[in-house]
Each structure stands twice: as structure tokens, then as C-alpha cells.
Length: 80
Image (cartoon, rainbow, N blue to C red; front, side, top):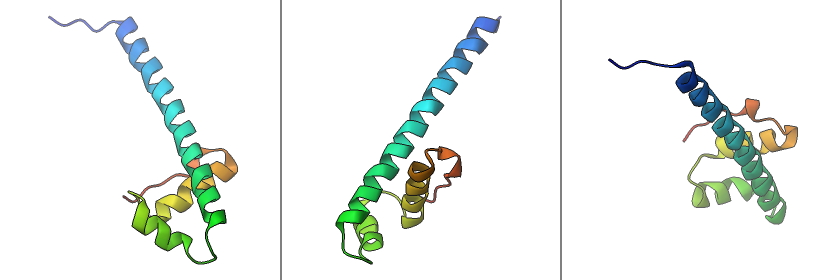
């Protein structure tokens, strides 16, 4: 018989929260880096650069940059 304890549940909760906070920090950092790259490129070239160089879509890049600008990853929605 497998007995689930409150300790098991609380540990899972702590890990979920810890990893969610890390994910938010990485999403904001990604947005900051994308915004810096956009500033380096000539006007109108950023979308092409994202499509050629990133593993995600231009709309995801925009979501990352919006999260960075607001310092809040709740604005994120991704399309591969």
C-alpha cells in the first residue's frame, strides 16, 4: 500500500513553486535579451531575425519582450 503524506504533497508544492519562479525569471531574461537584439538591428529586420535564429515564433518573442517590459510573465502565451 502506498501512503501519500502531507510531507510528500508539501514537497511537491515547494518544487512546483520554485520551478515556476525560475521559469518566470528565465522568460523575463529572454525578453530582455530579445529587446536588446531588436535595438541592434535595422528597423523591420527583427521579425526576420527571430524566424531565422530562434526556436520559437515571432509572436512568442513579442510575448517575452512584453513580459520583460512589465517584469511579469503572466502576459505570456506561446506558439512554438
